Length: 155
Image 1: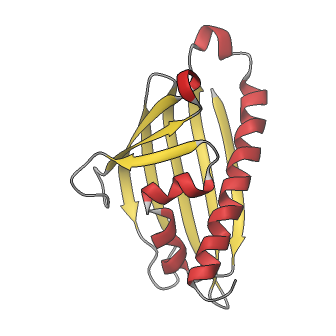
Image 2 (image 1 turned 30 degrees about the vertical axis):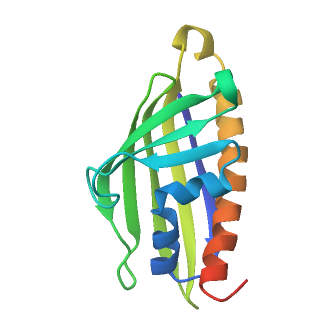
């Protein structure tokens, strides 16, 4: 089991940050070697489904996900999205929250609690996978923040 949480401050309003984060295909713009496609009729709300494909050629894998909680930020109230990962390689949950901050700023907290298969080979690699997750998602959230700040006219 691999767990991690990454936090990123963003110079953009929570509604803008939320809109950027839930534009699932755009995640491929920030996450290296990743493309995302929506597989459900509706890309928003509980039940929205999408697949992230990560890697190169035969080393790529699909990471199918479904939204299980959808609560956009409203006023001073934070938003939260929870996702179940149900792939052959990555299983578990992911979530993010968007917390409004003073001055039209936000904080994004992104967490994952996943198992990477084959578990018999990866079960002892939890700390290393957690570190890789924090590094990778940290870079991804910084790139997302730049996009949200650009959309908010603060880049």
